[in-house]
Image 1 (cartoon, rainbow, N blue to C red):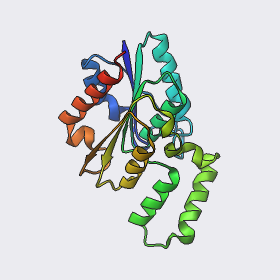
Image 2 (spheres, rainbow, N blue to C red; image 1 turned 90 degrees about the vertical axis):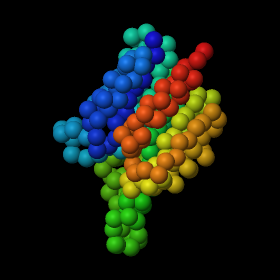
Image 3 (cartoon, helix red, strand yellow; image 1 turned 135 degrees about the vertical axis):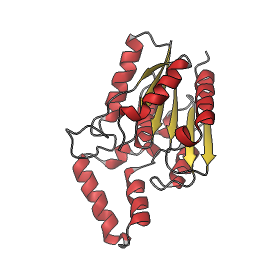
Image 4 (cartoon, one colour; image 1 turned 180 degrees about the vertical axis):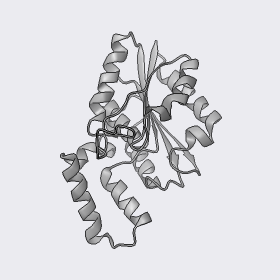
Length: 220
């Protein structure tokens, strides 16, 4: 009995993953789609936590899967959820494989890229101010949420990175940097599309690649 945990992005909610959950369930996987704290439709929270609490929530899903008799466990994360999935996999040896669709390598990189794209203000001092405000809101060292610092720990478990080369939310260079930092076995799928559009614009290829990746990853 193999489980997949689906982790949505920071402006999404679990419903964004439901269609994919049913498709993967119909392919023979058991699927868990958690509601992440301070994401999407969690209206009790007034700020985005950038994954601060997501790691423990993913661990809770892993424990639930193990209690339910999981043989192998994989994660599919999207955007910030992909970054959290990478960190969780690096820290939790019960996770056997991870797919990261358009992960940001760090909060700093995200702030810098969005400032570059959407602001006419100079980098200094405004980027530093944004970083300081974000660090204050989160209340921890933002480097602890930078998946680039953790991805090399996943090996020898496999990682599959999906890279949108026209991404306007996350710097496409982040995907290359994460991939280059990762150790084997690793894969990357590059497409000339925008942020997290693999599952919608390239649906058939997406589900074929996801299924094949986990089948191969879960082989004993």
